[in-house]
Structures are given as structure tokens and as C-alpha cells.
Amino acid sequence: MSNTVIFYFQLFDLATSCRVVLCCRVAPLQKAGIVDLIKSRTDDMTLAIGDGANDVSMIQMADVGVGICGQEGRQAVMASDFAMGQFRFLKRLLLVHGHLNYQRVGYLVLYNFYRNAVFVLMLFWYILFTAFSTTSALTDWSIPTIVVGILDKDLSDKTLLKYPKLYGAGHRHESYNMYLFWIMMIDTLWQSLVLFYIPVFTYSESTMDIWSMGSLWTIAVVVLVNVHLAMDIQRWVSFTHIAIWGSIIITYACVVVLDSIPYFPNYGTIYHLAKFPTYWLSILLITVLALLPRFIFKVIRQTFWPSDIQIAREAEILRKRRSPTRSGRVTQADFLNVKEAIQNIQETSELSTHTMGKMG
Image (cartoon, rainbow, N blue to C red; front, side, top):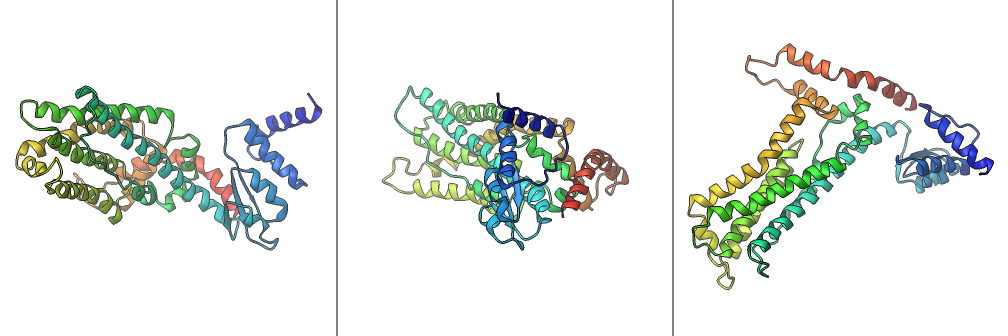
């Protein structure tokens, strides 16, 4: 092993043992080499920020490159992923936009796995039930998850800037990890079974044909996945309401239109089904029973093992809320309990806050 390789290993061990490392009189290729050293020996993502031509190789080597448009030209900006006018804007880029982007993308990936899996598994149970028949009982549908992925916010900008420790949720992979993925898949399996077998058992003694059953499944699956999405929304706005509830209304309207065309085999099925309370009770029972385990799991987890994000969010709600409680008003004890709960966040965030302030 050459002396250069040994030197790099020693440099890596020394650097990772320190909280901050300052490298002085470093050449442009050496800057890129330091970034590459961290990338190649760890699973961490790297960010490089620079304002001159000598920082271009370092910016291009990093996972995320940030260029500052200053007196040294625009070479760094042209080679970067993000450009800013002053170094102090890095704090907001990381703590606010970085956190929100991770939280949104992480949930969007999980939800899209769930949405497609529940649809496919429902068809799988149908194929088994019909002895691998080639018929299809469902109409294609889509959910506007993009609206939630763009507009949802778990915390305000002020809170994220006040407590830099909250940025660590991304480091700990709290929004997307294998544990959450498999929990979601187990929940999806349960929901697909409820979605398929409740209508089958409900109408087992009736003469309902496959088109009528498919019409019920189509409405039920759209209602189910939308209510599932509504349970996880952190902040409601008007566009979110339009996307969630409007999707259900539009889907139902499409089913009505399709069932009104005499040339289609499912002609008139929705008009026959909607006359009976059993149809509406089946949709309600599917939604409640399918989402009940998820609701219980969320309540237990948030009650006994709350995350830093949830604690900070509860503090936000108590600061904004002025509505009466059972005792008449939000009491001082409520605020003291939340203050005690977020004390660890505030204490561990002080160093990061001072560091960011000095960088600005």
C-alpha cells in the first residue's frame, strides 16, 4: 500500500473524529479530493459551496453543489445545482427547503408504493376468486398526489430555522426507510383484503353481476386511498381540499357517465346500486375497517414515541391556538408541558444556530 493511500486513510480517520475541519492553502483538485474521500468511504451525502473558479471541481464532485454569485465571477454558479447571492442564504436552503423536500419526497414515494400495491393486490384477490379469469372488474383511476407533494408542510419556516436539530430527521431517514416500507406493505395487504372481501361477503346471497361489483370496488378504492392520504396531510389548504375531495367527486361522476352509456356492459349499474343503503354502508365499512389499524398505530406511536418533528408541531399548534378547552382555555400547564418537551431540541440546537449565524 502506497504512502499516499495510507495518508488518505489517516486523514479520513482524523477528519471524522472532529466536529469541524479547516483545510488551508488547498488547491482546487485537493478540494475535490477531500469531497471524494468522504463520498467514497461513507454513505453520507456531501454538499460543497464556493464562489470562484477554483471551487468548480469541488462543486462538481459533491452530491449537491451550491454556487455564490459574487466578485469572483459566475464560474461557480454555472457549475452548481443551486445559486445564491449571499452565503447566509445557505441556512434557509438547508433547514427549510432541504427538510421540506425530504419530507415530501419520502412520503410521496411511500404513498405511491401503497397506492399502486393496493390496486394490484385487489386485482390479485379478484383473479384468485374468479379462477384466473381474464375479465377485469375495475376502471382505471388516478389520484392527484402531486398536489400534496408540492403543498404539504409539516412545520413552518420559523420553527425549522429556530431548531436546526430538526434537520437531523433527514439524516436518520425518518420519512423513508425499510421499516416504514414494510409496515406500509403490511397495511396495504390488509386494506386490499378488506377492500375485496367486504363487498363479496355483503352481496354473497344476492344476484349482483361482476359489473355492479366492479362499480362498487372502483368507488371504494378511490375513497379509501384518498382518505388514507387525508390522514397523513400535515397542513390543509384550499388546493388540498379540492384535490382530495374533488378526486372522489370526479371519479363518481365518471362512473355515473360511463354507466349511462347503453353500449357498455355496465349500463345502469350505479343507478341500481345507489338506491340501496347496503351500497353506501359497504363503502363506509370498507373505509373504516381498512384504515382502523393504521389509525391505531399512528395514535400509539405519536402518544408514546413522539418524534422531534411532532413535538415541534404540537408547540406550533399551542402557540397559535386560542380556542377553549375542557377547562375553558389553553392553560399555562399545557404550554409548560410542551416547553419541557422541546427543551432538548432547543439545547442541542444552540450550537448549530451559533454556527449558522457565524457563517451568515
